[in-house]
Image (cartoon, rainbow, N blue to C red):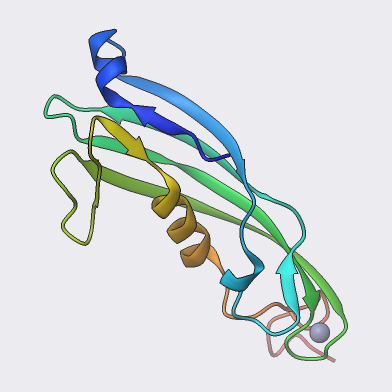
Length: 137
Ligand SMILES: [Zn+2]
């Protein structure tokens, strides 16, 4: 379940920052690498801050595990991906670089999905194949 940030309620209660941690069951369709899938839901750990103009910043880290066939030798491979993520949410709509939100509630769904997409590597390599070129043999 992707949580929402209820900005109106938080501000009314004079709370301007907080932490969120949750799991996101990412769709295997997001993975563009053949024969590779998510081994488990992605884990998000975020800190958010609400600024004076009600802009919300969420930053933190996403972690997920990919498993499937090595993109080079096709043997079984598994890799943990960890990536710093950051999103800005503006009450009157985003400008392409930022996200928008309406009715005083930030919906993190698009940001969460984008974060996983941007963190995905172009290929999955097994341990042998991930040794940098030149160190092989
Ligand atoms: Zn390999």
